[in-house]
Image (cartoon, rainbow, N blue to C red; front, side):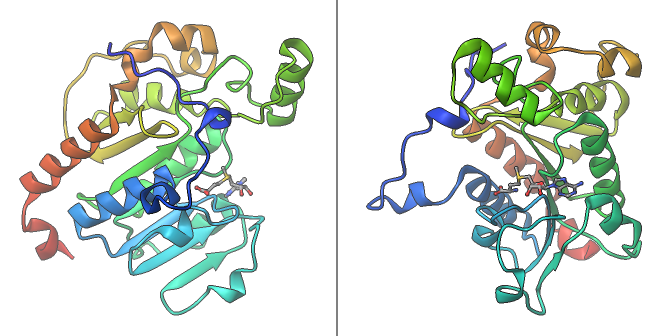
Length: 259
Ligand SMILES: C[S@@+](CC[C@H](N)C(=O)[O-])C[C@H]1O[C@@H](n2cnc3c(N)ncnc32)[C@H](O)[C@@H]1O
């Protein structure tokens, strides 16, 4: 496995006002690049918070879901920009089967069960050329991989004397589930240029299950995760985006015909 290291939330360089490229966060930068390649028209973000990514995404129709938006959504809502102040489960439960998204960014509650359910729901509302982006699939330490955010931060502070809010939860288990139980998907994990994120798309790439046991995946811990990091299919941002470019290229104009 290539060594890409673990970018840390708390050690990113400060933004420089004189460098516009730096002003775009890593998620929006990647999403906008993917949107260009895919000719994406419809975007869904699960977990929006203050909108650092959402507001910077350049896709004509955007939908954001969050039970607790950290900004006044009324100021930004419009015909093509919708906000749903509810959990992702509530949102998907009332969504018509006709709704389709080209790009979905899954960044809501960072537990395995919720991320798995968000992924499944988002897949139902995708299509053959959609791309699903799963945030926070690479925890930076045993604390950040803990399922309870408050406890993770408090114990790190107490045990390690480190003031860091870094928390990824156990979303990493979703990648192991993808690997073993979603053979219709291919995926890779961008591990450079900002917080790691896993990209998934519909493409058959047969692989042998690692655990073949959902219970075992549920019980994974950070240490075992680090022993099996090749399951992430880690790539640099440039490699991941180049791979998606090849994917969209191979699908060619079929994309427009299917819309
Ligand atoms: C890490 S933040 C999202 C950051 C945002 N995507 C960005 O890139 O700036 C996670 C968000 O998920 C939201 N969240 C928590 N539980 C959720 C749920 N069940 N459904 C949807 N969003 C949820 C939280 O309120 C929080 O705002």
